Length: 597
Image (tube, rainbow, N blue to C red):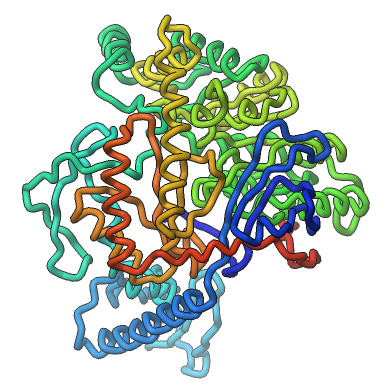
């Protein structure tokens, strides 16, 4: 599961567009009688920043549900300690990874003159554990007790909580990840420690979990035919980096097309979306620079920030007051101890947050970036292709100028049905990354058939294929998103995120319901993704649906009918439609984290 920060049950209530309409503005959010009644209203002015409605709902967790969730985790923890005690007594068989006894101790024989037993010592060694010297006749024996390779307590959650519901993850599929998939059936006879395949295939499972936003993950059609032709001409692998002999004409064509699609001067592509973030951020900032990162940013952004050596400070999710305070402090106080100005200030945000379903408040972020002369790094992994009237992402969605975003990052793994990532921006930026990015210098180039899949699907989105298929897919995804979200809310589920986001989190809360929901849905031939701690805050477990243009209304109605039944069965309809404004919260040293030598 993907790592995620902690949080409390009431940290994400109703968020409107930050303007006032017969109500009270607190912390940049609006409180009105309409909001208290569960209605979300758009107000046309927010300093002139927003040109369209921006509606997000994060309903407060009911107090009873929060208490029962904590109690559930407490009971699981108590039984976990009990089971560990039984394993220690060898009453219950333990399957966890452990070291053999002979691996824990090392002996070394050192010859020398006779020495007295008073020379026996016991000196701790921070790298190896404890070292003990023993005099044995004319020899000196060194006994080294090494630190355990496997820390027992670190695996407590995995052994006793995750293992109970492990069957909900890593299910192997054996078909194209389209609107429906085929899943290989498996069974476990040792409580999910291992699985055996039965040989049966579960056919036609409705796929509500893949990031196939525009439906280009398919084995028929123009993309497949084009990729097959390129496969015959170029083969599968390139076997070299772009700087050596792995730079194909197809790569050049793709980068020109990406730059045109984004509306920027130049672009560069990479073979892995995760590495696009983790390997390029260290090339852009370093020691003496400041990174301001949203608290819910993806692990690839977090890793890239940590590898850079820059100072990192965290602002509250999509909270512009928190971001502005950190920007003000950075300008006023400068670097710790020396008080010198920061070399660079880089703001890291995502277009769509993949666990929350929220959309970045980009107009306000850009306004703050310009006001305080910072740089902006925008990760559009989930938003490119999925948002905007032309599918050009969150910049297109808000009608903004691409030049206002310094670094535009995205991936081809979702809306384009391929793999890899890209960075777009000024030509000077791309030229710099070509020689300084580890992901460009050391990584193998994109596979030619994958490149052709991206080129063909992107031309389809842009309408350069001579059809309106791309435009129709974008419109279909938007319609599916709004319809699915509206129906779930009408049923009484608590749904997070923006009304235009194709990522739809449905709140489960209690740990026992994570596994139960996934299993019950699969029984009804629907594949879903369930997510729990540590990928989410401990009391905010959820099911995450991803909508696709490939989903027909019939498929969605079938899925909604089954979700409604499972919701009644597991009592998941928690919504009371009490949407409340974000409360004032203090900002001090606890609101950010610093990394300094």
